[in-house]
Image (cartoon, rainbow, N blue to C red; front, side, top):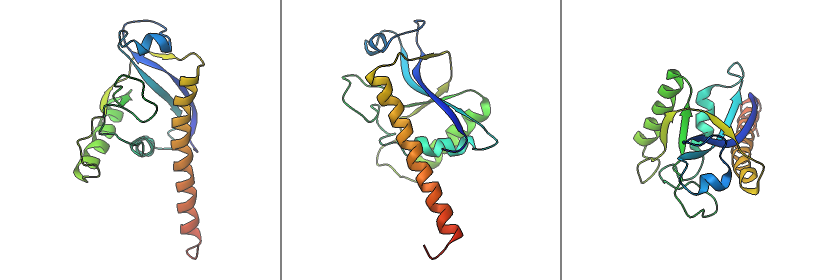
Length: 154
């Protein structure tokens, strides 16, 4: 996706430094699995990243999409600045007002804290694939819209 410089899969929050996937799965560390997105705000707006996030299935569920992990992992947006917090909250409220989902959106918007990169495992690779799939889809949609704007006959 143009403007996204990189992503890292890992964990944030919690009481343990450098947790492993196994540690986090015990639900005893307090960490959340996360994808850290590095982006160039001159090339892509934070609001555009939020749009990609909201395309994920089930933002109203406490359990994100994917194989059953046996424990609930609430979807969260971690913000770094007050402006990001305001934008994330506004985007969530707009979706709720649009009644796009039959249930209230359960996604939490919380301050970012220390991020610990994940070890390379099947699970962390899968989590990265979720973001890659979302950004790839958003990129295809973006290219499709550009084509339709530049050539109305398509």
